[in-house]
Image 1 (tube, rainbow, N blue to C red):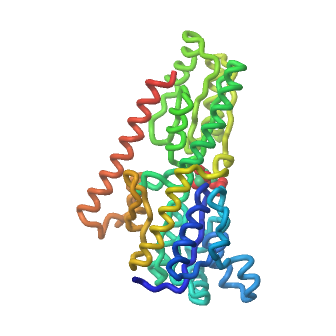
Image 2 (cartoon, rainbow, N blue to C red):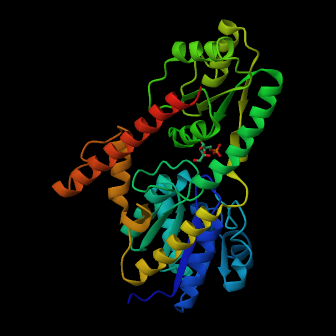
Image 3 (cartoon, rainbow, N blue to C red):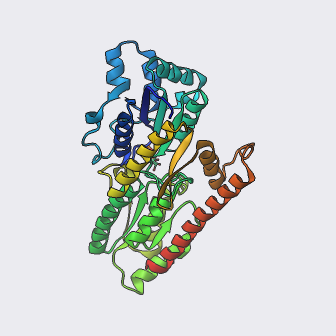
Length: 371
Ligand code: F6P
């Protein structure tokens, strides 16, 4: 069993409901194994900040918080992250890494567990390569980590947005309006797709699928004129490209109004779906991933991303996960595929195909059902 004096835990990038449950699980599992835990505040920026500071009280208050079992009481129910979060470009520089290592060495942080998205995992692999074994836990509402079926926060964001879009339908119905609703997700349309189906949206625009606006507008016109539909919801993923500097959803709403005469509004759900108490599913996934991440470190394994595969908690190598993501997003860089076995490359391709197929299948369903 690998020996660690202290594990550092941090959350980085956009916060996601369930991050706290993961922090709690990591902390309590590590403590149960006699390992100290320190919360690194504000993501990787905390590691850098602590290196510049010499006053121990300031370090504790601003950058590094020792965690005991009571420090993580009552957080399993809470959204956000008790360790705070940030995006930290400086960490990617050599000087930034030097500061991070200085903090780890001075404060006896022998390993790091980092919760976040792909940027967070790049940081974790850099730390591993510099001698601090690290493991990533996928925490982002976007569900845009190709290696895992589910990221922590996705389920909660879906349920929060579901309630909000249902509420929009009430007012759309009362006023016989169409409401084009923009949903977060960065370049990933999963939130929009699931929500569009579950809320009965008449159209769903996501970056992964071609969107036929003329067809969608005809459906909206028919729904009103031929089928007497009053309240109409159209979902638009945040990752759809702006049109002449105007948000895609706003532009689409304007066109619906102009060409059908239907009173149409544009609404952006925005950051509100990133907060709120995590659902049971997110708490359970986060807890299992947190415990397993510590177990992996104890087994002497690192440079991994925790995943959900067919409802089981699994893990893959971080480099595999990052390259797989770039393959899925058509963003492979020269040399990316070097060093992987034929079997691994086949696994990556199969994973990309399965994900594309899932989106296509769900998109097809939405077209048949939502009228
Ligand atoms: O990755 C989570 C996410 O909420 C995305 O859906 C969104 O595009 C982005 O973060 C917003 O980032 P910020 O909070 O920095 O505005």
